[in-house]
Length: 396
Ligand SMILES: Cc1ncc(COP(=O)(O)O)c(C=O)c1O
Image (cartoon, protein in one colour):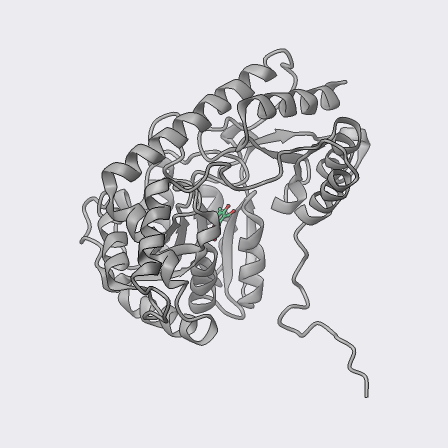
């Protein structure tokens, strides 16, 4: 007997990440000895702060080697609640029984998509958005409905645009500010209008605040400080980006208790608890507030300096259009019309790699093929050299 793999109906529509092709090519060039400036990565280039790593070593020595409760250890859920309550305004404070700790915020996003949405449900996705939102919604057998933002508004969507895209089947929306891939940050007014619309329509709001602490033109607002209610609100966050802890895989959801119970049950059947030792590392990050605030501030200042340096490097190229990067660590550059290609971003990503040895992510990964994303989560010198080569390749 020979069994030939055929994708099941569950994954038949799942797309490979559009970032993979360029990443694979960049890896091959590196292996062949070429020096590549890799601006494709979506993770801080810092090491996890020492006090967090030391807390993890101590936790291991103290025996953090066993299963924990699926939803995470209570002290960590309490610390998540306390951290969230720094932002809550005008609503009941967040409690530990509204928190599920997961294997990265990615898992919390997936838990929420599966538990809130199903076949026939439409979910509005401000576009461009992080590639996994669309795929997670499809895996939940719901329909992701892209809602395109205007370039004049930093590709952010407005409440009116969301309302215009809604149908009777709309069940919710995804929100991500600061945004991956654009670095745009929604203003308090923009968020307030969107949250009011969602509350009025009884839509779930999945607010991914993973980049919230990485903002440069003033703080980025949390939905927890603006929402009229938490009844329809799922706030997703994690330690990966702000604390330089991508490899530890700790994220969480904050949601109403009934949904929290469902997400816990779903997680209990799929992965159970995230690694015990990582939970203790995250506990140090969230509970030793003075040390972690200082570490976060230091890293954000560094990103800020690089952001400014990258923008300065573009001043000799006034025709290069990009989204003003107010947060996260990405620059989203418009390459429309490049070589007359329909997938201008894909053509540009291939060309800038071949000609300038720079790896970037084509905008098709985020459903906006006229753009490319570069990350400046690297040294200032590399980021400046990279963006200069990008501009040179674009304007000749
Ligand atoms: C917008 C956004 N949300 C969530 C994640 C996932 O983060 P985590 O490492 O916590 O799973 C990423 C990672 O790139 C991201 O860009």
